[in-house]
Length: 341
Image (cartoon, helix red, strand yellow):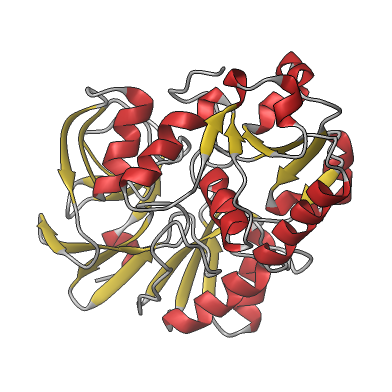
């Protein structure tokens, strides 16, 4: 079987005709396999959705109980037969419940990575290398300039600033699903046990993480705190909130932003970020290239990101590579199913 007969791009997304399903489709389809809960990959309106239990739960929290006609929870490593192909989900290390999806038939295995990272993260299952013939990789940070520092070192910068400026509030912009919880967990791992305050839009998902056994310590809503109480403390908020009137309730706030894009200083300046924190939930250049090597894939399909650079690198390594040019993926939509407060 040729790989493109097993899985191929079409306007709705990656489609498997032998199993009659799409992976992370960008429009409603009869049957969708979803890699993770971010809104650019997990959309409502499908006839049937197969995903990990955590991804299904997160979709319900964001879109409501009736986000799909039917749902089916899939365990990591479980093999399903869809049509005449085998399908299995494997940890992607991106956010809670994130998965790579392996599609196998006739001795050919294709792995669709979704979004992934190979860096340690206490809030989700660690990335698992899945040997395959074709690896479909994201390329969000697919340029050699993107070499992420250790996340713990970036959190140390944040806590050093908190100690240096106890009279100021520290507001960290972070995506509400995955990044915010990881930052909190890293803060706790560094020994910070003071209350951490949350923007209202972060509460539901963060509390869900706690129900899955992820300890995040003393969490409080910023809107319920007196202005003076927010000084010398860390508050997590969606990135969009950093430019809103919401920040006026904080005493002389230090605006921080946790993102791999903070490696680009111009982006930090454009956003008015005083304290850029290079913390990413995507693999950096070394993570991407090391993962490609580790899969043993002879063919690589590259999607959503710096496709050309990674395709070029693959060809220099003797691999067959091509960009998929899928559209509809990129930054998480912070407005998806959340109440901002």
